[in-house]
Image (cartoon, rainbow, N blue to C red; front, side):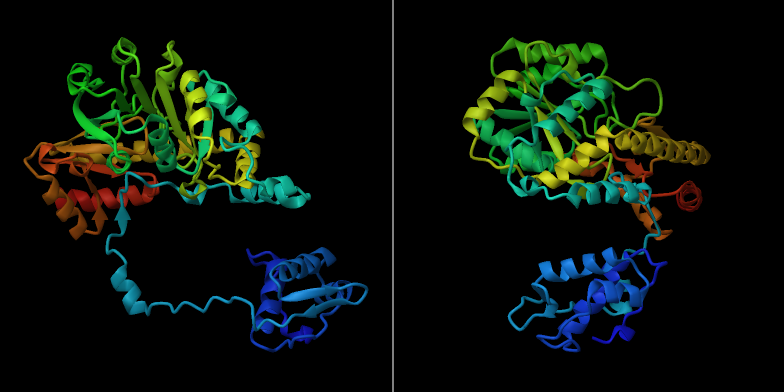
Length: 465
């Protein structure tokens, strides 16, 4: 092997063992290292490259695990015959012209679903992941408990009780890969004889999942306090899906009186339940956090649904259900064929992230970042106060803009796009778009820095005024 072809960059963000692994792997794939050729001893190669021996050993271990080399006892590492190895062909990249055509022309994106991933604690996550896999933990590669690891569910219970006032035990918690999967579990638990009632406007993706699962779905209107309980009674439904701590997309916080009315509705007949979707309660910038509805439930009628995707990163894909005790017992009897959809490795990593205090620090950091962006957006939008009003502020990561000068939603979106700014239609959250008020748009601020918000609103001022 010709060590002179290897050039490791100590200043690169790519770990040196990965760089070394990449060099050797490429040489094997391209035939520069022939089958049967012996690789240098780890001690000799580490001395030649002026790196630690563990760097070379990690690279060799990775190549060994992927079948590029084999270890011969007391002799060393040798290149394998790789003709039979499965290899992915290089995917051709689109030309710059084609890529440019595929990209949207909007420079500023006020997406209401955005998350600031630049502030994700990559170093901490990498450290926990490395420590989790450092020891020989074969049990983490087993399926484990279908509901999720007990220790992880204990941690979720502790966090929810402290942060949201949720009262539960690990036996009531089910961990799943995203809310879609947990809705599917509810479908298996309830069967198809139930009718789900949702607000309008609401989170249409959840509505679509319920419909695909075969549920009857009805909608009722919302007022300034949230779902109309009077209309809920008239709907004939027995499952109410609500977001009492921060309704999407209107941003309504359900007051205690309406919450008690909703609980009273659930208690009036056996078999009625409330699904409380607490999707972004971590982000509140004025006053104290609003306790979860589940904490006020005395008869076991509230199903609590939460996720880490909004507070950490979308790709985490770890959500959880908190079932009332009666439903949790029914679940254990009726759905024991389901396996956990979240790997035990990911559960262990997130469990450490929470228990060791990193999650709390991350939330505090993100609240500060989002709060400053929220305030910056509200401050900039005051310049447009002659033509619009702001709603749904002080929580979450988006606001609503209501035009008072007669501008329609479609016109506002078109004018914004013409100056390189993307805003979003409120009407998309309605079952029938014609039911939406004529001049409302959503503006999220998680993806934009304070400077970008200032620049984007300057453009909107020219486009809308």
